[in-house]
Image 1 (tube, rainbow, N blue to C red):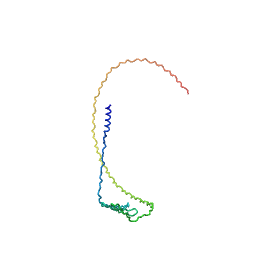
Image 2: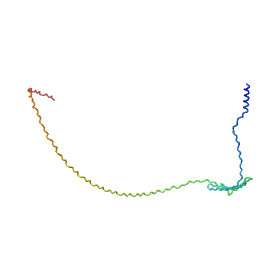
Image 3: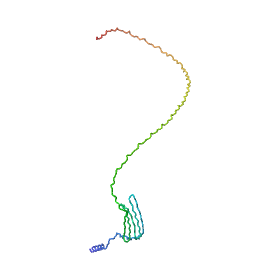
Image 4: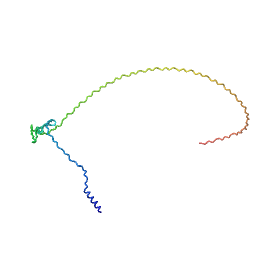
Length: 206
């Protein structure tokens, strides 16, 4: 019994002493050093003019590292030109705005549309030249009668057949000798004929 209690106490102490392993990696946030550059002097300028889109402006600017100055000009829709001159330094931004010309606001007139009149198309009648056909010239064929030579036939000569009369020996017949038959004259009794009696026929009366 004491052994079981001692084993349980050791198990509890070991559980409290054990610490789970920490597998999650630790990353340190990167440190960026801000790089500052000393101001460099510069200057530029450009000009844009496009009559189709009514675009007209220009811009120029220069700087020496401490003071920046420049100006730009813009053509406004009311006919004036806006000119802005500016300067920027450690004290701030200062601008001088000027206008050239007078603003014009023409009276709006509704456009009147007139139906377009199109002249009737005049199509000239096509002139077709009469076709000129040249009659073909055919040359009459010349046929030459063929020359046939009459065939020459030679009458065949046949020799007359020579027939020799056959000679047959005359047959020799010997007359047969027949003995004279000895016939005994038959004796016929004289027939006795009685005179026939004819009866006169009787005919029916009509």
